[in-house]
Image (cartoon, rainbow, N blue to C red; front, top):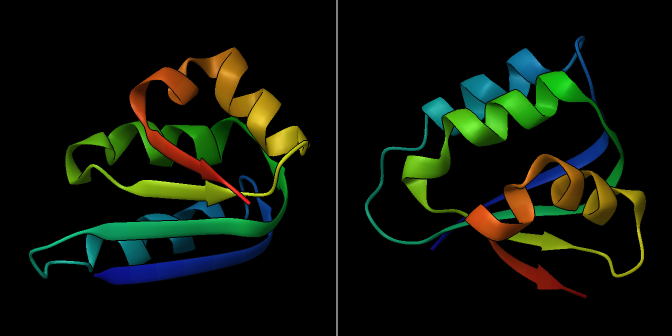
Amino acid sequence: IVTLTVKGEIDMTSAGELRRAMDDITAPGRLVLDLTGVEYLDSAGVKVLYDHLGQHPEVVVSSGTVILRVLAITGLRDLLAIRET
């Protein structure tokens, strides 16, 4: 299991860093993307998640957050394995 923990905002400024981190994960096995510390997710961050659907990440998010709404609105909630905490 490889866990990538993200905190703060995922926006146009930081999405490239998330993209590089996800691109660098080459180990076989399960990828867990911990977004419980993410306060904001814009379209640049959504694009990174879409582009990495092939890695089949398990996405961990806090219940009742705006991040869940963004994932639902963009359709990612139906495409990703999401675990609420």
